[in-house]
Length: 262
Image (cartoon, rainbow, N blue to C red; front, side, top):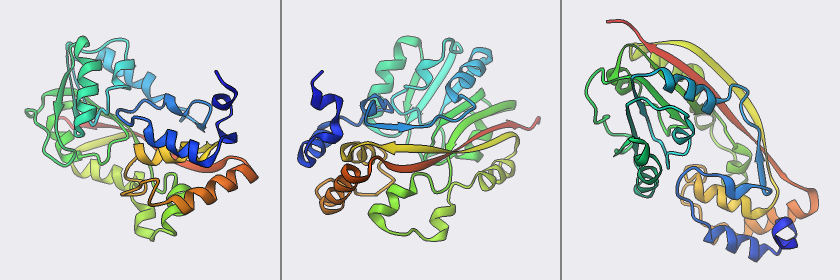
């Protein structure tokens, strides 16, 4: 590995941005960020806990699976396992990754009704859904079945969002509130049995990592392109060179809810 590759923050602004713009963004594999950005992981270990529940399930559904990266980590999958995904490149990636393990990957927009029968699953999982469709989740769960998920919380990585977009209104900052989501789950007929929250430190060690993050997590700065935000990116590059990593904080919550018996 070249010295440049080992220390990307010492490379030129143009080189860092060009590399980040050229990097593929399909799926939820974040290995590109190794050595360039860090994020604390929640204490509850979602992928491991999800795997334990999958091993005990008879029929499972993973919502908004991305490229299937998290589901693929499970050592054991139920004989009937399905996954939904709305973005075509991710559908292809998830099919390639999960198909050999017998998972049926269904192309389904995030805001559409779930294309499954009532009470089809005893476990529904999701990591970082755009939005959790609780009435649909309750419908496809069997009585006594479980929804187990890790959600993005309110104001997540807003240091980055507000650097580019300026201060956000209170209603935007409060979106994805865990207590509000728990109330939505209860209203849909689910009983929330566990709800945990964490605020986690993130560090971006070079401006290319910020560019790649915003190209991959497209809802953070809608319509983001490196060209449109070039002056802000250059200023950020100079700030990182001068002061060190750009620090932000993600928020996450773990939610486990059971469908009430009929």
